[in-house]
Image 1 (cartoon, one colour):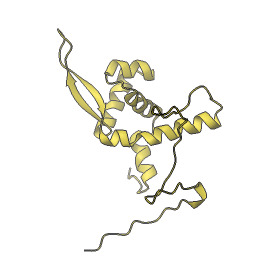
Image 2 (cartoon, rainbow, N blue to C red):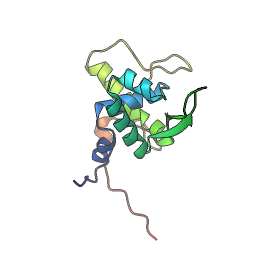
Image 3 (tube, rainbow, N blue to C red):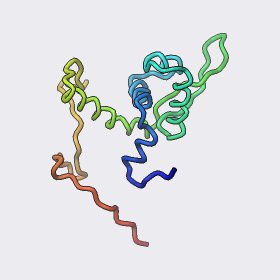
Image 4 (cartoon, one colour):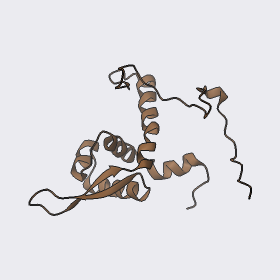
Length: 144
């Protein structure tokens, strides 16, 4: 099965399951241990193992060994730079759900000043871009 060239399709192939998205949410909240991921996401150990392996293979999480005193060495899972860069996707889903599924219980806030935070699209010149001004273009290939 060949994957299309659209970045949305490619991304959904990597993280398009509910459990993968929730594992990413938990990783952002600081969860690192296998059993904690399984418990907090509410999935079986087999499903947890499969999702963590996929996210490590995709480069969003990295395995890091740790050892509790008197226990064998185990792996914990930490966000990579790519995993951290993925978080605006998670926050955009959070914001959409809060606004459109009438869930006002939680909100994103700026810890620095306490103001409500939101996810925005901005161009490299610093302009906020409304949906009707956002385009998709083929990137020009670099000329040699």
